[in-house]
Length: 429
Image (cartoon, rainbow, N blue to C red; front, side):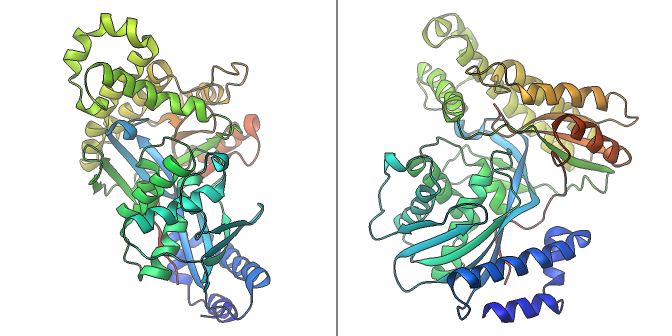
């Protein structure tokens, strides 16, 4: 469909139902404008006579299972109503040109960029090349395309902007060159491969799967080739709560070493027990070997391993609590998970710069506020940690006050009131 045809469809309300399903009725006018703006920008950059498609990939919020996925643990996560949208059209050559609003254009020639290049680690071009390489390795067709994207998933926000970006490239390639046949698990695994091998970041699979799947899900990564995902049909809004994210202003960009130390130390502890990952380690035997382990890998690695064992059990109990509608038990797990991340996982701030502790400060202020509300509530660190965001489950009657209170410390636009989005990575039209 030509860009002008798409704009007319949006103007006449023919995408209203889809946009309402994705973003909610109160966001309809804003999303009409957003998609129309993206289509016009694509036309100005890449031509008015192209046959284009629209795509959307949401960000994600990790609800439980902090730093467990890379050691084949369990998580609870959800897709949220902040997303990347893309207008894309196929090319006849092997070049991918992708322009993200506010950033320089990425240009990748798939004919020449087919293997990881350490000099390109940390750049978005490496993610594009990595996703295409991963698709090709699995036998899927790849080719060039032009795309313009707009993102409401803030970079470094802990809502997985990088996973959403990777999934977007994979979703576009799936629909343009493979008739949409690449399932969300495969897109997620390919995206993880791109981030690990081409981008140089040793992430797990949780971010990619949560962005791609949609809704609230619990995922068990015990079998890394075939992770088990289960939808959890629980509506926090219907229960009278809003999931709020507070952006402290920190960015993950310079924290790769801190982030990488977590899986590395966990796997080091597992290796000393003769296993590849902690999921394979018997906790009782680990505790029996603890005196000798302290000498070999140090206390922080042991504390992070103990966090893993407890967090894995916590995910199971919290998933059961949501299935049974037991919000009090779920909230207890949220608070326990947050404490464990602070004390044992130790990913609340970077030891490189101890003067900057935005997450710790936000958690402290959040606790002070939520102690004053009448109904039960909960809060914890959000995502990979060291910088970025925290999350809070705030009673709906206290949300406006919460936004104002936290905004007074971190800025007017620092607090996001989210809704869980039922759809994951999709072709909108």
